[in-house]
Image (cartoon, rainbow, N blue to C red):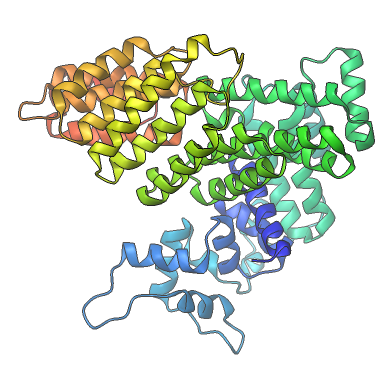
Length: 522
């Protein structure tokens, strides 16, 4: 793939991630892509989901396996349907449109670009026309700009009225799609990113604010103090994610990433290397947030961008950490051999550093990948190495580490999970109980996963303890109401499905009521 197409794809991923984080629907994003890239609805919906034609075909075949003597759908089928009505395309059948609509989470009619004459209905209202996408006067909502300015001035990712902002974004998307003008779309993208970026200035005194503003206006003014400030904001974002989840910080992270990208061309020497490392870490963190939101395609793109930038900056520690993230993603997606490749490479780079905590974490992700691949000996050998490396952390003179979150509690939780996956339930249960006691509660997601692991242990074996498991998972639900990690919520729901046969038991009923109160049942 050449640089131009890779850049355009990254641009779409960035915009889609920002808009999804603000609550925009796939319908709105697809209509935006139609206007911006001048494509038909079928292509726009695929872009909105970040899928290739082959990935759409794969998803189709997973949902509707080909019957005997029938050929599976291939990327060529998707290509033909997307090219229609040109002479190189083929018209999709009603059944094909219905199945594509299932994949794209839309209506079958949304995938057609036919004329809409509902405006001829005397009883139709302007609101109806706007909802259906009929062109009306090409003016923005009367109070759009004041509302954007107010949101930017007052935005706090923890306390802002997000529902009002969601409505504003939807109105602006509708307007932009009717206008079909590139400058409008760019303004909309800026508005989404700028509102999220407002916390960048939150803790600056007057002098720092002026320095950072001048750096944004004139990249040649960037200096180490500006970089230090952006690094500090990234650190706050990472700690907010530990407690509150990816939705709280995704917009701010993407806005900072874009900011640093604009500063890079005018930087030179050691300052450029530092900016490159910062860009790599922001890209890595954007990949992690996307992964935690189950947006694996975006995560892969951000991680690859981070890996390249870290290596260009000769940042060995960060390069190793990015490879850990890539390994975790591959293992989670059911590709443990790829996960092993990335993890072993991470161990090699981490071994060239003095960061014992990072070395421990690289061994940990290696153990996870070997566990998923069914290799118990290699998995527990890697865990032994992780434990020995952790034992050296207390004497490690380094004040910080990219793997700052990795400690004995998380190690114990992962070891418990490995024992459970290899059928060693007694050891797994004992370790899970210890992990729940050891994990720092400020890492809400990590603690919740450990608690769910304990609940899984209580549900395993010949005689599941329904009362204990229900009570345990209720505590995980409380944490999931605080940290809305999509992966965490999915795991919680999976655990609840295991309890459904006993859902009329008093403790299971109490769990169901708690899940419903937190809106976690789906």
